[in-house]
Amino acid sequence: MGRAGRIAGFSVFLAAVVPASAQDAPARYNLPTPVTGIAEQINDMHTLMLLICLVIFIGVFGVMFWAVFHHRKAKGAVAANFHENTAVEIAWTVIPVLILLGMAWPATKTVIEMKDTSNPDITIKATGYQWKWGYDYLQGEGEGIRFLSSLSTPRDQIEGGAPKGEAYLLEVDNPLVVPVGKKIRVLLAANDVIHSWWVPAFGVKQDAIPGFIRDAWFRADKEGVFRGNCAELCGRDHGFMPIEVHVLSAAKYAEWVGAQKAKAAAAGAEPVPTGAAATAARPPAAGSKG
Image (tube, rainbow, N blue to C red; front, side):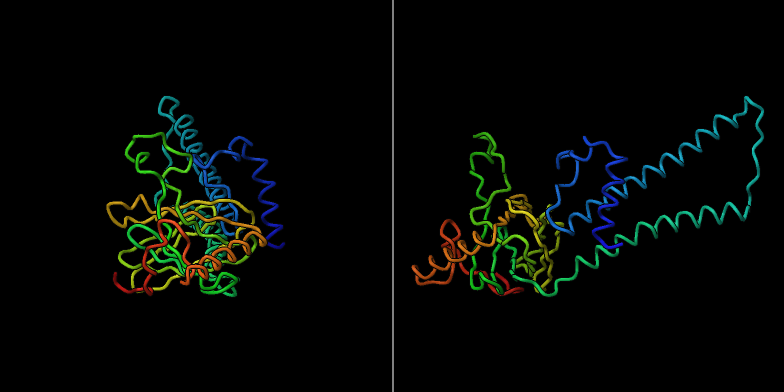
Protein backbone atom coordinates (compact mmCIF):
# COMPACT_ATOMS: atom_id res chain seq x y z
CA MET A 1 0.00 0.00 0.00
CA GLY A 2 1.41 3.43 -0.95
CA ARG A 3 1.68 6.49 1.28
CA ALA A 4 -1.59 7.93 -0.05
CA GLY A 5 -3.37 4.67 0.74
CA ARG A 6 -1.95 4.53 4.26
CA ILE A 7 -3.00 8.13 4.94
CA ALA A 8 -6.49 7.47 3.57
CA GLY A 9 -6.81 4.32 5.68
CA PHE A 10 -5.71 6.11 8.82
CA SER A 11 -8.11 8.99 8.08
CA VAL A 12 -11.01 6.51 7.91
CA PHE A 13 -9.87 4.93 11.21
CA LEU A 14 -9.52 8.36 12.79
CA ALA A 15 -13.02 9.38 11.68
CA ALA A 16 -14.42 6.21 13.24
CA VAL A 17 -12.82 6.55 16.67
CA VAL A 18 -12.49 10.32 17.18
CA PRO A 19 -15.57 12.55 17.40
CA ALA A 20 -15.97 15.10 14.61
CA SER A 21 -15.91 17.95 17.12
CA ALA A 22 -12.46 16.84 18.31
CA GLN A 23 -11.16 16.47 14.76
CA ASP A 24 -12.26 20.04 13.96
CA ALA A 25 -10.89 21.50 17.20
CA PRO A 26 -9.22 24.88 16.66
CA ALA A 27 -5.45 25.19 16.76
CA ARG A 28 -5.77 26.60 20.26
CA TYR A 29 -6.47 23.08 21.49
CA ASN A 30 -4.81 21.02 18.75
CA LEU A 31 -2.13 21.24 16.08
CA PRO A 32 -2.77 23.75 13.27
CA THR A 33 -4.46 22.46 10.13
CA PRO A 34 -1.60 21.00 8.04
CA VAL A 35 -0.92 22.47 4.59
CA THR A 36 2.09 20.33 3.64
CA GLY A 37 2.60 16.59 3.36
CA ILE A 38 5.11 16.60 6.23
CA ALA A 39 2.76 18.54 8.50
CA GLU A 40 -0.02 16.07 7.65
CA GLN A 41 2.20 13.14 8.66
CA ILE A 42 3.12 14.92 11.91
CA ASN A 43 -0.56 15.56 12.63
CA ASP A 44 -1.46 11.91 11.93
CA MET A 45 1.35 10.66 14.16
CA HIS A 46 0.34 13.05 16.91
CA THR A 47 -3.18 11.61 16.88
CA LEU A 48 -1.94 8.01 16.59
CA MET A 49 0.43 8.42 19.57
CA LEU A 50 -2.36 9.88 21.68
CA LEU A 51 -4.62 6.94 20.79
CA ILE A 52 -1.86 4.47 21.72
CA CYS A 53 -1.36 6.28 25.03
CA LEU A 54 -5.12 6.19 25.62
CA VAL A 55 -5.26 2.43 25.00
CA ILE A 56 -2.30 1.87 27.36
CA PHE A 57 -3.92 4.07 30.01
CA ILE A 58 -7.24 2.22 29.81
CA GLY A 59 -5.54 -1.18 29.81
CA VAL A 60 -3.18 -0.51 32.72
CA PHE A 61 -5.67 1.24 34.98
CA GLY A 62 -8.48 -1.14 34.00
CA VAL A 63 -6.43 -4.16 35.09
CA MET A 64 -5.28 -2.36 38.22
CA PHE A 65 -8.78 -1.39 39.39
CA TRP A 66 -10.12 -4.83 38.47
CA ALA A 67 -7.38 -6.47 40.51
CA VAL A 68 -7.94 -4.17 43.49
CA PHE A 69 -11.70 -4.84 43.47
CA HIS A 70 -11.70 -8.60 42.88
CA HIS A 71 -8.68 -9.46 45.01
CA ARG A 72 -9.33 -7.31 48.03
CA LYS A 73 -8.75 -8.60 51.53
CA ALA A 74 -12.46 -8.39 52.39
CA LYS A 75 -13.10 -11.20 49.89
CA GLY A 76 -10.40 -13.35 51.46
CA ALA A 77 -8.03 -13.02 48.49
CA VAL A 78 -4.47 -14.24 48.95
CA ALA A 79 -1.74 -12.55 46.96
CA ALA A 80 -0.05 -14.72 44.34
CA ASN A 81 3.73 -14.95 44.26
CA PHE A 82 5.21 -13.72 40.96
CA HIS A 83 8.78 -13.50 42.22
CA GLU A 84 11.14 -14.36 39.33
CA ASN A 85 8.23 -15.40 37.15
CA THR A 86 9.85 -15.79 33.72
CA ALA A 87 6.63 -15.46 31.73
CA VAL A 88 5.65 -12.20 33.43
CA GLU A 89 9.13 -10.69 33.02
CA ILE A 90 9.20 -11.60 29.33
CA ALA A 91 5.72 -10.13 28.80
CA TRP A 92 6.44 -6.78 30.44
CA THR A 93 9.67 -6.49 28.44
CA VAL A 94 8.48 -7.64 25.00
CA ILE A 95 5.18 -5.75 24.93
CA PRO A 96 6.71 -2.27 25.59
CA VAL A 97 9.44 -2.98 23.02
CA LEU A 98 6.81 -3.83 20.39
CA ILE A 99 4.87 -0.67 21.25
CA LEU A 100 8.00 1.48 20.92
CA LEU A 101 8.92 -0.12 17.59
CA GLY A 102 5.41 0.47 16.31
CA MET A 103 5.68 4.15 17.25
CA ALA A 104 9.26 4.59 16.04
CA TRP A 105 8.72 3.18 12.54
CA PRO A 106 6.38 5.91 11.17
CA ALA A 107 8.25 8.61 13.12
CA THR A 108 11.59 7.60 11.59
CA LYS A 109 10.16 7.60 8.08
CA THR A 110 8.79 11.13 8.59
CA VAL A 111 12.06 12.44 10.02
CA ILE A 112 14.00 11.03 7.05
CA GLU A 113 11.58 12.72 4.64
CA MET A 114 11.87 16.00 6.57
CA LYS A 115 15.62 15.97 5.98
CA ASP A 116 15.38 15.37 2.21
CA THR A 117 16.02 18.88 0.86
CA SER A 118 17.21 17.65 -2.55
CA ASN A 119 15.92 19.04 -5.88
CA PRO A 120 14.18 22.20 -4.64
CA ASP A 121 12.29 24.50 -7.01
CA ILE A 122 13.28 27.58 -5.00
CA THR A 123 16.07 28.13 -2.47
CA ILE A 124 15.79 30.93 0.09
CA LYS A 125 18.29 31.85 2.78
CA ALA A 126 16.70 32.99 6.04
CA THR A 127 19.07 34.82 8.39
CA GLY A 128 18.05 35.47 11.97
CA TYR A 129 18.78 38.82 13.61
CA GLN A 130 17.74 40.29 16.94
CA TRP A 131 14.81 40.58 16.25
CA LYS A 132 13.91 40.17 12.58
CA TRP A 133 14.48 37.84 9.63
CA GLY A 134 16.46 38.54 6.48
CA TYR A 135 15.45 36.68 3.33
CA ASP A 136 17.63 36.13 0.23
CA TYR A 137 16.15 34.36 -2.82
CA LEU A 138 19.14 32.38 -4.06
CA GLN A 139 17.61 30.10 -6.70
CA GLY A 140 14.40 30.12 -8.68
CA GLU A 141 12.24 32.70 -10.38
CA GLY A 142 12.81 35.30 -7.67
CA GLU A 143 16.61 34.95 -7.60
CA GLY A 144 18.26 38.16 -6.41
CA ILE A 145 15.38 39.42 -4.27
CA ARG A 146 16.33 40.19 -0.69
CA PHE A 147 14.67 42.02 2.17
CA LEU A 148 14.25 42.20 5.94
CA SER A 149 11.04 41.14 7.67
CA SER A 150 10.18 42.80 10.98
CA LEU A 151 7.26 42.84 13.40
CA SER A 152 4.56 45.30 12.27
CA THR A 153 2.16 45.14 15.23
CA PRO A 154 1.55 48.75 16.35
CA ARG A 155 3.30 49.75 19.55
CA ASP A 156 0.09 50.93 21.20
CA GLN A 157 -1.33 47.40 20.91
CA ILE A 158 1.77 45.95 22.56
CA GLU A 159 1.60 48.51 25.39
CA GLY A 160 -2.13 47.96 25.92
CA GLY A 161 -3.27 51.31 24.54
CA ALA A 162 -5.38 49.77 21.74
CA PRO A 163 -7.33 46.57 21.14
CA LYS A 164 -5.17 43.71 19.93
CA GLY A 165 -5.49 42.83 16.25
CA GLU A 166 -6.31 39.41 14.84
CA ALA A 167 -2.63 38.74 14.01
CA TYR A 168 -1.24 40.32 17.17
CA LEU A 169 2.55 39.80 17.37
CA LEU A 170 2.41 37.52 14.30
CA GLU A 171 2.31 40.18 11.54
CA VAL A 172 5.29 41.58 9.63
CA ASP A 173 6.01 44.45 7.26
CA ASN A 174 7.54 42.28 4.52
CA PRO A 175 6.26 38.68 4.45
CA LEU A 176 8.05 35.79 2.77
CA VAL A 177 6.28 35.03 -0.53
CA VAL A 178 6.36 31.61 -2.24
CA PRO A 179 4.33 29.84 -4.93
CA VAL A 180 1.90 27.04 -4.13
CA GLY A 181 2.89 23.46 -4.96
CA LYS A 182 6.64 24.18 -5.25
CA LYS A 183 9.37 22.64 -3.11
CA ILE A 184 10.97 25.46 -1.12
CA ARG A 185 14.36 24.86 0.47
CA VAL A 186 15.17 27.22 3.34
CA LEU A 187 18.81 27.69 4.34
CA LEU A 188 19.01 28.82 7.97
CA ALA A 189 21.74 31.04 9.37
CA ALA A 190 22.04 33.53 12.25
CA ASN A 191 23.96 36.77 12.62
CA ASP A 192 24.15 37.02 16.40
CA VAL A 193 22.57 34.32 18.61
CA ILE A 194 20.64 31.09 18.02
CA HIS A 195 17.22 31.63 16.44
CA SER A 196 14.67 29.10 15.18
CA TRP A 197 12.49 29.29 12.06
CA TRP A 198 9.15 27.73 12.98
CA VAL A 199 5.94 27.62 10.93
CA PRO A 200 3.62 25.00 12.51
CA ALA A 201 1.26 24.65 9.51
CA PHE A 202 4.27 23.65 7.36
CA GLY A 203 5.68 21.18 9.89
CA VAL A 204 8.98 23.11 9.80
CA LYS A 205 11.08 23.98 12.84
CA GLN A 206 14.82 24.39 12.38
CA ASP A 207 17.41 26.25 14.46
CA ALA A 208 19.51 29.00 12.89
CA ILE A 209 22.98 28.91 14.47
CA PRO A 210 25.76 31.52 14.02
CA GLY A 211 28.59 30.12 11.92
CA PHE A 212 26.53 27.24 10.50
CA ILE A 213 24.19 26.68 7.57
CA ARG A 214 21.25 24.38 8.28
CA ASP A 215 18.32 23.67 6.01
CA ALA A 216 14.69 22.63 5.91
CA TRP A 217 12.00 22.44 3.25
CA PHE A 218 8.28 22.64 2.66
CA ARG A 219 5.78 22.39 -0.18
CA ALA A 220 2.53 24.20 0.58
CA ASP A 221 -0.51 22.51 -0.95
CA LYS A 222 -2.88 25.48 -0.62
CA GLU A 223 -2.75 29.23 -0.96
CA GLY A 224 -3.06 31.47 2.06
CA VAL A 225 -1.24 33.30 4.83
CA PHE A 226 0.61 31.16 7.36
CA ARG A 227 2.33 32.42 10.47
CA GLY A 228 5.01 31.28 12.88
CA ASN A 229 7.65 32.66 15.18
CA CYS A 230 11.21 32.30 16.36
CA ALA A 231 11.07 29.36 18.77
CA GLU A 232 14.31 30.13 20.63
CA LEU A 233 14.88 32.40 23.60
CA CYS A 234 17.04 34.73 21.52
CA GLY A 235 16.98 37.76 23.84
CA ARG A 236 14.73 40.03 25.88
CA ASP A 237 12.45 40.72 22.87
CA HIS A 238 12.40 37.15 21.58
CA GLY A 239 8.59 37.23 21.45
CA PHE A 240 8.68 39.95 18.78
CA MET A 241 10.27 37.98 15.94
CA PRO A 242 7.37 36.57 13.90
CA ILE A 243 7.34 34.77 10.57
CA GLU A 244 4.65 35.41 7.97
CA VAL A 245 4.51 33.42 4.74
CA HIS A 246 2.19 34.22 1.83
CA VAL A 247 1.57 31.26 -0.47
CA LEU A 248 0.39 32.49 -3.87
CA SER A 249 -0.66 30.96 -7.15
CA ALA A 250 2.01 30.69 -9.83
CA ALA A 251 0.59 33.70 -11.70
CA LYS A 252 0.38 35.92 -8.60
CA TYR A 253 3.85 34.86 -7.52
CA ALA A 254 5.24 35.83 -10.92
CA GLU A 255 3.52 39.22 -10.57
CA TRP A 256 5.09 39.70 -7.13
CA VAL A 257 8.55 38.81 -8.43
CA GLY A 258 8.13 41.23 -11.34
CA ALA A 259 7.00 44.00 -9.00
CA GLN A 260 9.98 43.51 -6.68
CA LYS A 261 12.45 43.58 -9.54
CA ALA A 262 10.76 46.61 -11.08
CA LYS A 263 11.09 48.50 -7.78
CA ALA A 264 14.75 47.58 -7.61
CA ALA A 265 15.36 48.67 -11.18
CA ALA A 266 13.57 51.98 -10.57
CA ALA A 267 15.62 52.60 -7.44
CA GLY A 268 18.84 51.55 -9.14
CA ALA A 269 19.57 49.12 -6.31
CA GLU A 270 19.29 45.46 -5.48
CA PRO A 271 15.72 44.14 -4.92
CA VAL A 272 14.65 45.42 -1.50
CA PRO A 273 10.94 45.99 -0.78
CA THR A 274 9.73 49.41 0.28
CA GLY A 275 8.73 50.05 3.85
CA ALA A 276 10.53 49.99 7.15
CA ALA A 277 13.02 47.41 5.94
CA ALA A 278 13.95 49.30 2.77
CA THR A 279 16.57 51.39 4.57
CA ALA A 280 18.08 48.43 6.41
CA ALA A 281 21.49 47.14 5.46
CA ARG A 282 21.80 44.05 3.32
CA PRO A 283 22.05 40.92 5.51
CA PRO A 284 25.69 39.82 5.86
CA ALA A 285 26.92 36.36 4.97
CA ALA A 286 25.96 33.45 7.20
CA GLY A 287 28.07 33.17 10.31
CA SER A 288 29.47 36.72 10.15
CA LYS A 289 29.25 38.89 13.22
CA GLY A 290 27.17 42.06 13.23
